[in-house]
Image (cartoon, rainbow, N blue to C red; front, top):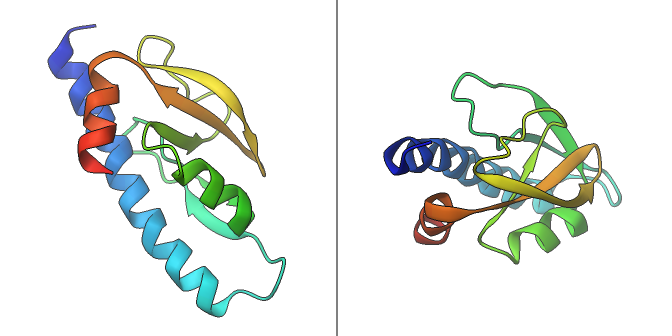
Length: 107
């Protein structure tokens, strides 16, 4: 996969992450204690609108790493990321290669 395509896919993930950061802010304010956040899948598929449910604590733990994203199982692209864990009903992936740079730049 060429570097430009990898960067575009990583930018798609960064957009979903930015939306989810706003969801987190609202969740801290409005969610009942223990109520999970409903976030967008942060995969590289621009047309993906699937939702995930993760606790505020799990979401915050993933956000501590600029190169990690929460996605639906089955949406991982092996060439650009690797699975590093799970949170709620999401899998946690870490960006590799040029996409890693995009993730850091857009965090």
